[in-house]
Image (tube, rainbow over all chains, first blue to last red; front, top):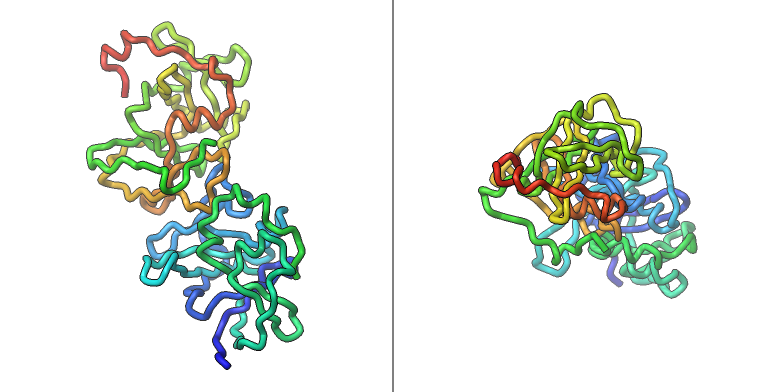
Length: 161
Length: 171
């Protein structure tokens, strides 16, 4: 049975998600300098500069719940993703509610994504049951940062967890 | 839809291509210089014929609407004290003005323009790209996209004076 390391992310409002061990590359200190981009979606209103790159900063809880969610702390995780193996590594930033937790996941934890609404499934590659925390979607970072906001209306509303 | 998908964006790459940065509070908008018709001091701007425009300006006989925008590109009617420059933009069918704090000219060679991240593209966004300039992030747009996002009536633009253009008074 294969077992892998992952990061458990607390997105706020009781929402959890996970990314692979190598997909989180940096945690920024509190209150990084943000730049507001006019007319952008409420859940992705700001960018920040990280190592010379301009990265979108997403409030995923706000995107999933389709309403404003104020971050209680300005913890920011820099994530890395590729569209396909060998493609250029791209980065995006996520607002977290708490520091990420390193966990181990194995095949026996896998659970069905079908319980989630369609929108969540666009943003998740898989799902697993983690201890007493319930089902946790594994984020599809490429979709998360590549889908234009016109898909936002189909994002699930508070069905998880 | 005004917003462009990344594969629809065609950004000029010539090193001689010039841009103008319009600063409005914390917001910096990068607009192709060929779309800038004139710069006027805001004391030449007169209040107001009403309608959507914050104020109006007359340049060589043509009257053009001038808008004062918030940092989220909403029209505001109370003009901040630092908005000292009226930038007249040409959208082909006419001119409209934007009140700005500062105006800076840049060349493409100074800029590494990147498309707006796909996840930030909304149906009404006039922002096509982003660029890091010094310690600031500037938003790339065009006069046409900016005018479209204001939601003002198409007839509410001033007609450019051909004599002015022929005399080379455009910026």
